[in-house]
Image (tube, rainbow, N blue to C red):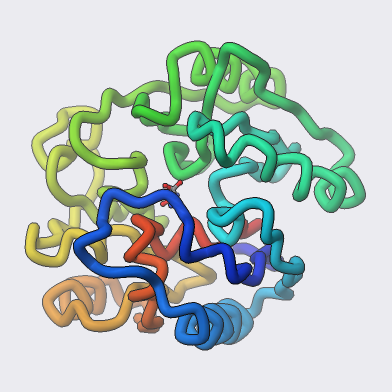
Length: 254
Ligand code: CIR
């Protein structure tokens, strides 16, 4: 079960965030603020105490807090984003984590990791090797995880931005899965909920205390997720999608 979450209010500079989805248009800032507030309310509904960080205008992508840290039950690990424009986001969150965690670790150059590439399944961590996460970063992370009694393994990505762009672990051995991961033998042992390609954005959803929070407007996925028995909660995150941001990357949950 999770008890806490950290989010960061988007700054006005959000409109300059990194994106490969410019065909979706520029995010509407006021709409993004409304959607972000609804996201916070959904986390609170699931029982989480939510820390809301101030906007960080110097970093347009800084609302995507999930990418800059990995929080485990034993320690917090500051990542080193592969996107250079995002590297400075790390120090803006580490001061908060230092005050909350006894053990704080870091990923060092030449390693790069964005935690959108890390999927926690119990005490095992799957790490996507992507344009943002390299093998040096993954190996450093695995060594750190082993120090705390966890294990890690890598997954090669082909098309998606991050591992969790196409995969979400929903506890109880259930995996929402889409695209390139569907046929991957690495995930064969999971009970798979196959998300249709036409709704691939919704493959990024989050389990929070027997609720699943998913992006609003993906009816087939909503029906599929309802079969899990979890309460399914929809939140509109369309403005964040315009920056390739998945629903999970808007929070750190622990
Ligand atoms: C980026 O390209 O870094 C941001 N615009 C989106 C980050 C999304 N992160 C995630 O899905 N974990």
